[in-house]
Image (cartoon, rainbow, N blue to C red):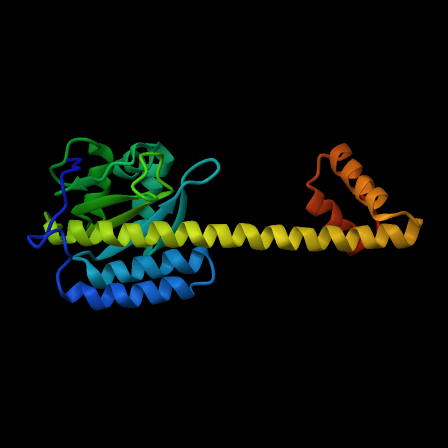
Length: 241
């Protein structure tokens, strides 16, 4: 069932002591991760260490359909594929509504019977899908952390609490990695446009304003991103037709 009650472990919501060292190492590894791919890979690997799960994965919101960002194995990939293809399942619910979804036993759960039957055949009995949200926001989450176990009723209060702490770590890390990648791409684009402008200025003896206007016009006329127009000019020394 979906649940949103206060998540405690019997000690003011703190995770068990054995998880403290794992989260300390996770914080360091996420800080050192160079990009989104490395960040989510670290998250799913730490999930296997910190939680009572045999499989884990992360799905992020894509431009069209959900994007599978990391899986621990092919079983998770199949679990995700079944839901994304049908646009139905606990993952889709968690991703669209921002609610945590717990399935205690796929062999008896009745909410997504066809999916649950196929997943049970894969050897997955328990499912815990936790949204990745920033700062407790009620907006659509940036993704979902999925935890899976071969045992029925595998996720207790401790697992629930740790999963939400891990999801918060992951949310901040993914958002930060995405921002850094966007900034890096913007810097790269500016460098490319600058190089292309230099080529035009030298070839046609125009100033920088005129060179930029030429690139912009070609971008608009060919419905091509300015960055791509610049890259083509640098690579071929020719503007798009």
